[in-house]
Image (cartoon, rainbow, N blue to C red; front, side, top):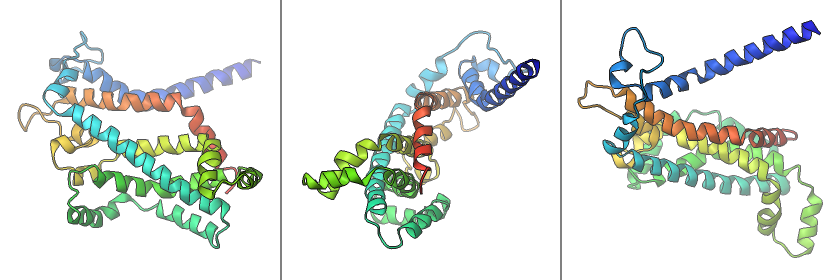
Length: 278
């Protein structure tokens, strides 16, 4: 009993250290965002501020178009997620139910495509965006974000669709439903865990993406949150407003953290269910 108790304590301590190590950067951002400006660079370092100062949160909205950038990120991330799920749902249903020749090889090809880093596409995409005059337009990010995540989403959803009994579709066809009707009315509702998992992961990618947003969005009012944070500046070009940068980081990271914590069980269920068969 003592050995088991000691082992449990060691596991608890180890898990606590890993959690603290993982959360330490975010906690430091929170502390920096509420520090008075004169304590940020104080020596020795003050880990606990003398008093809470929330002025940095007001400055990022009054001195910068941060509210507009949050709206840009929300619209682009949501639109990219829905577009990706729409395309990948159709592709996944075709691969799972139509018994296409070479379907499994195509899935492996999609997995291979997902290994390519997005940076290799930056030049051709820039040429396309410029030719279509989509610079500083939401579509310049929505379409690439959706396309980049289609391989992953298709892989997850195909595995999940294959687990749904085909007898349900046979009964639906007897009632006169088309393939598209079966997908919309039967397959997608039954695939809610996998859809939720895929949507959350795709949304996080769209929200955090930096390179494309930096390249295609050149105006301050068109930028997304990650680029907006990177472009924050002080009263002069030599001043780095760490308090405002930390405040902006907290405001944009905390919702994602809460979102993932609330839906972590659904994420695990969706990924596990989609990986049973392939």
